[in-house]
Length: 417
Ligand SMILES: Cc1cc2nc3c(=O)[nH]c(=O)nc-3n(C[C@H](O)[C@H](O)[C@H](O)COP(=O)(O)OP(=O)(O)OC[C@H]3O[C@@H](n4cnc5c(N)ncnc54)[C@H](O)[C@@H]3O)c2cc1C
Image 1 (spheres, rainbow, N blue to C red):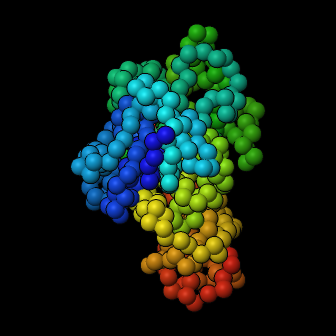
Image 2: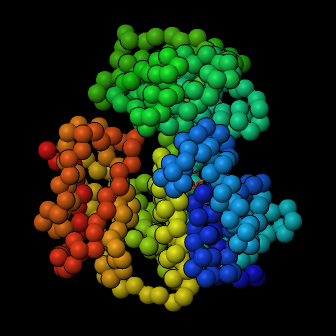
Image 3: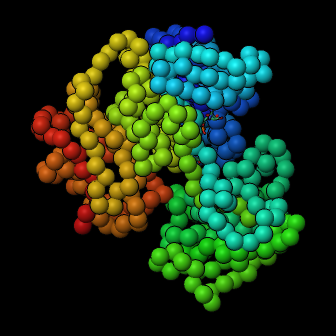
């Protein structure tokens, strides 16, 4: 059985950044396992710009952003195996993978970094009535067809879901000559970044139908149209509001789910995001198993994936070097209006210059405050003009806050008037 200090599952931006950091921290024996034929992850199909504004202070395309990390991986001579699918992982940190060259591989790792990204929710997850004809794709699949395979999935398009992938694909299909008739969104607000609504819909005159859903797909061999309806405040279609939109393609952008099968098999505790619950080191409940990137929670900006993954790489390296943390943790609790926090727990003895907390809100809030309580004591009360579920929030908890509240057990983050 091959042995490595650190094995990283997934060669997307998360896995690459984690590997680079662990190597910089002095760990030589690292292996990245990637099921695709190249490194770079989902960025390879994101040929639009908007990547890297925080990390490089430049607007790069997805492949350009990824290439900077791939170049570094090759300069640093980090080992990787492509076309290699990890099929099993156990709590003894034994990985089973398969590829054409080696067949079935068993690898023992001292530390594992989970960086498998996420996948799209398909039609089956939302139960749209109607025929099961051709012409229905997830937005990411359509993106791969157009940007990598050079094939157009259709000409007259309706998009269900206004998260970032749906918005980006509305613009992409338009630029390639398709007519995007509408982006239909169940919620009364878009799930995407404000900048994407402006640059991908408004600039091209594509209508965004909020509080609407697709209620029927029509067509025999191929989609010929969809019925959409308004929904009430319980998200139920309102009778009499049906509108028929002729189209040959329906793209679904109805959410992403962390790839969590391997994590679950290994006994990693999963949280509300569907990904592992982690501490401030990006460490899971299994000693020496870390997680970062979209496998943990879905990010809208890759720059934050990179930051988080450097943290995972550094801590995996520390683990190999024998660094221990105290067992005692403070738990983070998502309070009113907050859906989750990453990390979920913090080792107070391991805080170095503070901890970044990332979270999402449950609803759109205007002119509210983000409050942080160390037990019952308020330590942050910060005004925000707009908070939306589509935009991830980051808060820094300074080291001093922990020093001033030494016996704190819970930290609550909530939205208040
Ligand atoms: C359509 C779209 C548009 C975006 N637009 C922007 C933007 O404009 N600006 C921005 O900053 N960010 C954007 N993002 C977000 C950013 O691209 C992601 O946050 C980032 O790619 C996540 O990195 P990751 O490494 O966690 O996951 P991924 O990039 O998904 O990489 C995960 C890797 O793990 C591999 N893998 C999974 N399971 C296994 C297994 N069992 N064995 C081996 N390998 C495995 C996968 O093949 C993949 O290569 C966009 C994302 C999407 C999908």
